[in-house]
Length: 174
Image (cartoon, rainbow, N blue to C red; front, side):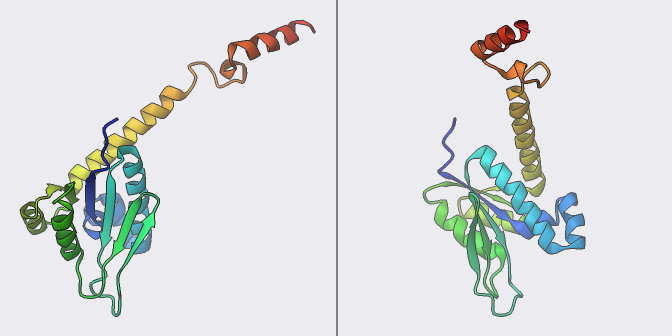
């Protein structure tokens, strides 16, 4: 397996929520639910791919917000401080990280894409991220299905040879 521990993906959380139809519809109902769903999706994606992942939500208009960084599974969830946008946070972080790591930024904000490229990071659109997530989900499902036994999911089908032989002998003694 390729070591991706020196790769970072920074995700502009609200940009992705409002770019993906499923999440946009959920946000119409509840922004908290949409955020939680995105984080869940990204945790699975990170687990499948293995790189470092930071999702950023801005609290730009939240009065008194001091900002926070939380670890949720193997991803970092950042809420910016008051008067700091996700774009500002992502730009600063990309500039610092890209000196030592491969950095990709997921956003469909064109101006943000241009700025982060100038900071040494690569860009990935919301649609491209969604395609990567779907591809990773498909690989996970295929892997899980490959682990299932070919026959029916019966106890006998899942036994090792010695246990199966012992049960068969026991059955024949009846």
